Image (tube, rainbow, N blue to C red; front, side, top):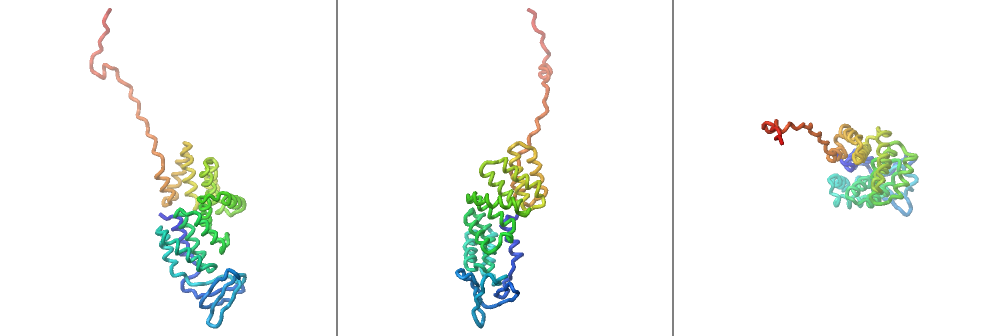
Length: 291
């Protein structure tokens, strides 16, 4: 059963933009490619410095379309440790990669894994920090909805409710369908945290009915809505739980729903009409004595 962290790692490994064998260099916005032995980022001047056999070239960030650097030697190990939930080993490695490879691709790749690892390790503040370091080098439009969800969950868990509300209101008002569906799920969870169960149920039902094509968030919406309906003794809860188990059998929320399903109500036994006392005891009825 895959957690969201495992899903992100699988997607990350399969979609890395640069291979370990790629030659260090920079692709400029004008199409020219520069290669060398070493690439560094200078924050103070907002430029890259590429060292070649002949010289050292300063290249302003504004001219750069893409950078290519070798994969950090510890990256694969950190990813494997995060996948195995060995967070104490993985998190320091990922943080070190982010520091050493700032603005050089691997900081963003490490931040993706670090954010989810920190959230699963119950350190939402550090997850927020990791996501914000990712946003510093990758535009929000390039960040997948599932990873945006990690950021919003971290904001919710860390108590940053005002910032979270601004994020969600903006997305619900103007975002793409996949982002709006995620925002409704997170807002529903925020309502649950403050005891606003009717408002939470409304948001989860919106996801289920209006965003059926957004499969990534359907399981959680179904699970949360079913739980709330069960508490209200609404029979629709059983229907949603059945839908969750049937359409998403391998999902974590399907397993949780099955474990938390209320026990079936016992069918009352058929009432038995008592037989006459005489028939029960096989003793003849005795006529009352005359006065």
